[in-house]
Image (cartoon, rainbow, N blue to C red; front, side, top):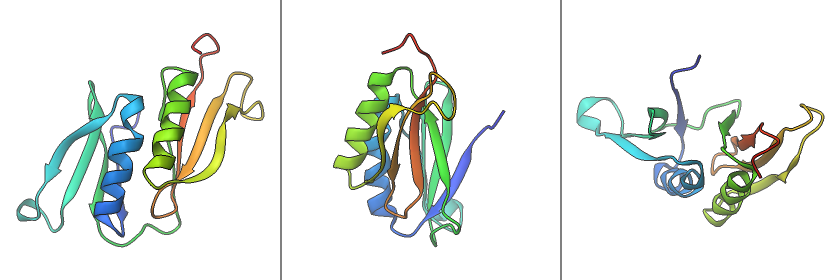
Length: 129
């Protein structure tokens, strides 16, 4: 089981705004800020009630670009994520919908973040509309 993931972003302010907006429908909020005094760079962390598990830090864009998938509680939350991410400056990389090539109930949406990372929200439960 993965405990957390951290990525570097080229424009911390843009990425902070993007993730603060896009992750709200998934129950995430910014829980942590690590100032430069405690490390080499400013870092922000997001999480849900289980704790912080996603971090971005000021730096150079990760290459190659990454694919990060966040689990959604329902298909409706996938759609809310997609709308919020686009409104926050993300670019469409796959509208919300079923992806039967992954499995019968895979419902996901894909958006490119400000650095071009493929960020996804996915619901696997067929009963959660």
